[in-house]
Length: 81
Image 1 (cartoon, helix red, strand yellow):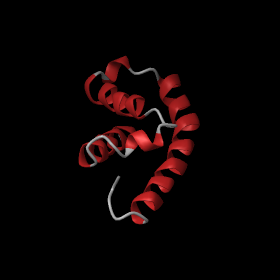
Image 2 (tube, rainbow, N blue to C red):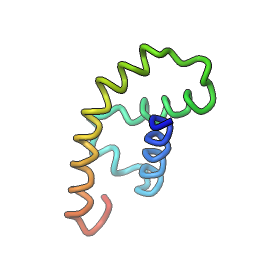
Image 3 (cartoon, rainbow, N blue to C red):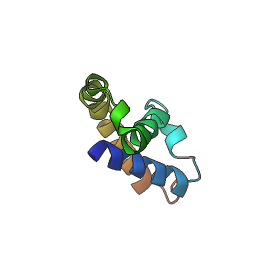
Image 4 (cartoon, rainbow, N blue to C red):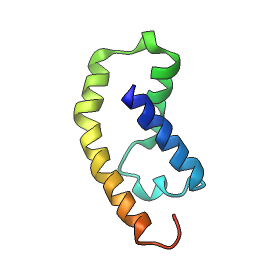
């Protein structure tokens, strides 16, 4: 459920910033993160536990680092983007 919440939050940030902020941090597969949210929400029985585990183990630590960079970027700029 946390992956679903993360994906939903990413969609919200993307909408709030007119799809400009995420493009400045393109080292993360934002589309994939939003996509896994959709799979969890709408195709729950199609989930592959190994893929979900690998996403959590491999991708989330890197995403956390980038999200912290995004927060600093937003805090240090008058505009969101």
